[in-house]
Image (cartoon, rainbow, N blue to C red; front, side, top):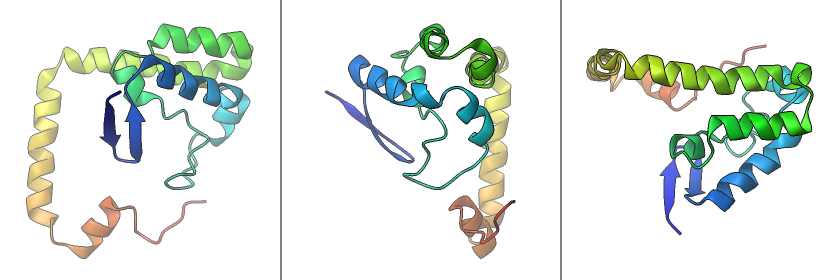
Length: 136
């Protein structure tokens, strides 16, 4: 089994691991997700979001399958926010594919920002999530 590193851990690149991750998240895909999705409790404590993107990106979990499984567990009204987010991911991916210059422009601007601020302590702290500010 292959594994890939991601910014917040390692994930196995097989369909059974992808389905296990989806099944583990399903109980929280309804109203719990809608209520807590904008909260970040930090690394290792992100049970409020699905963390399924790596498997979706590799097409081990297609969006239609995720929505089908969510709706088998929750009424649409309860799960609509999560389903909206899954569908937005699909929309924006297609939007970006049709506009490749958006990504290349982003990378160019990112490089310029890193060159201009790359040694600034505030910048380095911010990209590591160490700003000592907590939103209420």
